[in-house]
Length: 161
Image 1 (cartoon, one colour):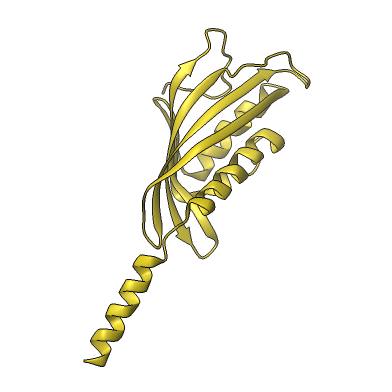
Image 2: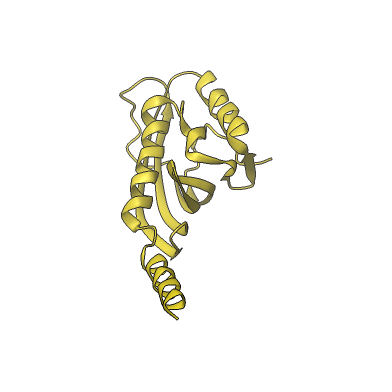
C-alpha cells in the first residue's frame, strides 16, 4: 500500500512542476536576441533534432534546414531587426511539454544601423511547442502566422514553400 501512495505522490508532484511562463519567455527572448544581434548564428540550436520552424506557409525541418535558411538570410547583406515579443500565454503545460502563444512585432530593414523605419513591418502570432530536456527547454515547433503586414515590408525569410 505504501508503494502505491508513494507513486501517487510522485505523480502529483510531477503535475505540479510545470514549465513556467518565465521559462518560455526566457527561451523566446534568447532566441530573438540571437536572431537580432548575432544574425541567427545559433538559432538552429534552440530546436530539437526534429524541430520545425514555420513562417506562414513555409516550413523548415530540423536544425540543418533552419541553419541553412538563416545563413541565406545573412548572405543577403546587412540587416537591422528587432523582434519584440509580448503577450506570452501558456496554453497548456506539463512537467516536460508546453504549448505557448505570443505576439511578435517585427521592426526590420536591410542595411546598417541606424535605419529610418520606426513602425513595425509585421505583427505575427507565434505558436510554440517546447519540451524540457536535460539541456534545458528546446523548441519542437515554432510557427509564425502573420496578422498584419506593412505594404512595403521586406521580409528576410521565406513565407511560402
